[in-house]
Length: 338
Image (cartoon, rainbow, N blue to C red; front, side, top):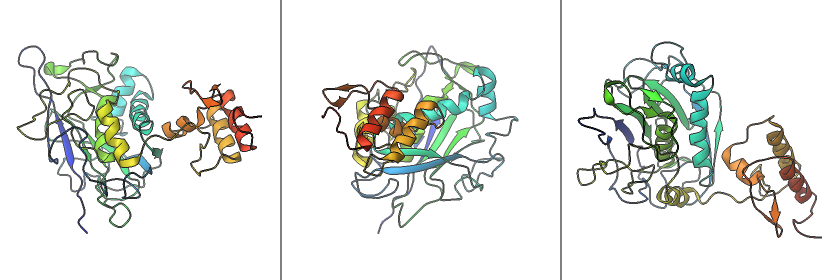
């Protein structure tokens, strides 16, 4: 069986010559086209390699000072050290405690709401970058040896069941670059920083890299989150890199749904066990009370209220109304029934 190897995607932000200059992306990828994917019906995804099949994907922040492994980068992981190169500390100092982690979580939530995937944050077990197979995605910050690369994301294993790959899914941010949480709304011009370079919007950058970890290559759709460089024939210069881009394009949505299937319905099955019972009531209650942070996929299934003609019309919140409806369903009462 041929195993597809993960790809590294490195973001390069060149100096501005006059006015705004487009971002260029360099990496090793399959042929560029709309809805570009690493696999083709099988593999290059998490969990069941057969498409489309959902997945539960575990992720963590690499422990501070963990080595770079075989990545070729310099130094140890600076994320979480509190010292020089700690992107989290720099972001939190500017935007408030927890701002960095919140931006990363929003990026995971965006993908989690787009397909049949659940992202679960866990404690990191330790070890250098690309050295352990669990959790699936590990995030750290290293010295890339330049000041223009924003980050690198590695694709999933060719076969996650039979051929797990320690490097697959890992994401590194370049601690020699400059990051921010852009204050603009979707489509607003990105801010620039030292030397006239675009600042790396944490949420937008991580959103792109997570796409690679899910198995998405670069798309030629210029508005897509996954738009990027593949070859001289499509060098990425027409991609919309100079605006805030945190909303998945239809092309991004089609791509991830091809691999993992569409996002689950709003049906009350918060525990993803194909039935609505007391476990779902408990999860929804904890989410509504703020006792548990539900991931995006769980929110999608828990947000069932209000009903319109017996059909859920989600309002974007998980609250007491949702809990009541899930409780009713767990007791065997059909929504909208007698």
